[in-house]
Structures are given as structure tokens and as C-alpha cells.
Image 1 (spheres, rainbow, N blue to C red):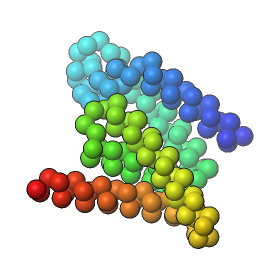
Image 2: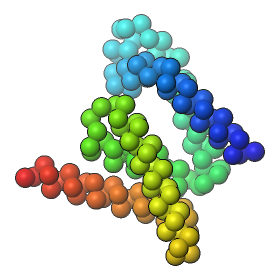
Image 3: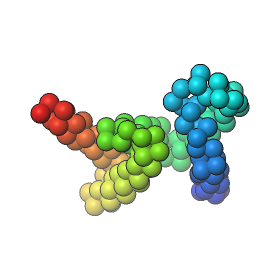
Image 4: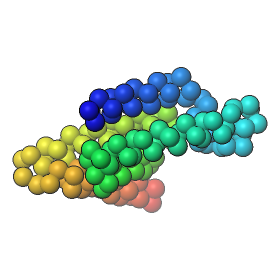
Length: 140
């Protein structure tokens, strides 16, 4: 049942993102600007809060608090080092999250390690490598 709920929630989030990308971007980038352009800021804030809450609660029930925070925070931080555009950050963080999930799952299977911890470590290693690369390239 949790799998079906997560699929439905994923579809709702994707549809909302596709159809109201510009409004979501304006709202997350500058709320005052969004309000001045006529966007119903309160409505979209409530929608974003509800969808984030549902995603986190469902993820915590299915995977655990550590894993869901790793899958939602680390890929976004990592993507923000290389992508300066909101759309590219969202897309690359989704791709990066999926890749880290698959790599962590594979490592867990190969070495009989805990799945959640393996995925978190892969996300953390990718973030640290990204920070190191960013530091080295900006110092030069």
C-alpha cells in the first residue's frame, strides 16, 4: 500500500511541478516578487508545505529518517555547487539522488552492509568530493 501511495504522491508532485514551474520558482526565489506579480503566495506555500510533509512522512515510514533526509538534502546541496539555474538544480538533484540510491543499494548488497547507512554514506561522499572540487577550482 505504501508503494502505491508513494507512486501517487510522486505523480502529484511531478504534475504540480510541470504545470506551475514559474510560480514555484518565483515563490522559492523571492516571495515578495511572487506576491507583486499576482501569484497567490499563501496557496502555493500551503501546497509546497503539504507535499513536502507528505513526502517526508511517507519516506520516513518507508525508509527511515536518516535515509529520507539524505535523499532530500545532500543531492540538492551537491547540485547547487555546479548548477546555478533553479530548474537544473531540481533535475540534477533528482538524478543524483537516484544514482546515489542505486550505488548505495549495490554497495549494501555486495558487502552485506545496512542499506540506509550505505546510501547515506554514498551521498555524503559525493557531497564531500563535490565540495573539494569546488574548493580547488575556486582557489585557482
